[in-house]
Image (cartoon, rainbow, N blue to C red; front, side, top):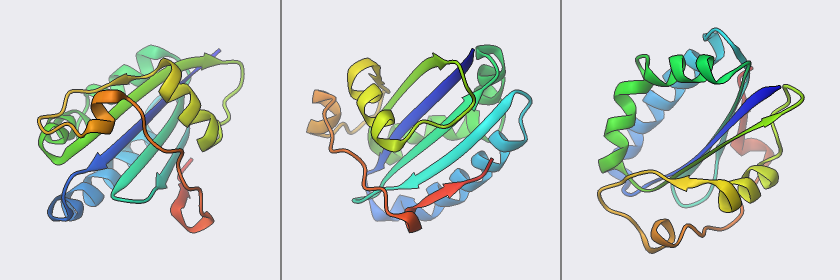
Length: 142
């Protein structure tokens, strides 16, 4: 069994995007190189919204990545940068990244909101539109 982790983040202001982009790319490369990492994908959605999908060999591998730099310190910045932040984890038999439509369904059904200092109404209601999946908006790192 493998562990899937999906996050959805909406950056609340254009002024945070340069730092967010830089950290996101560093974190994605960190995830791809981490022990136990099986798959890493990113999706740039509309309205400053970004999705991440990772597949891990087990929960311990995912948690080791989560707490290590640069991911760990960046998570604290999301409190101010984002007005929507949600995540979901589940186990599956294979190491394939799920489709973004499946990720959206699982996030709404089983996911949880992360803490943000400036929550949007969508964050509070835990309801958001399905992602747009234009080919140019997807990046598969591993």
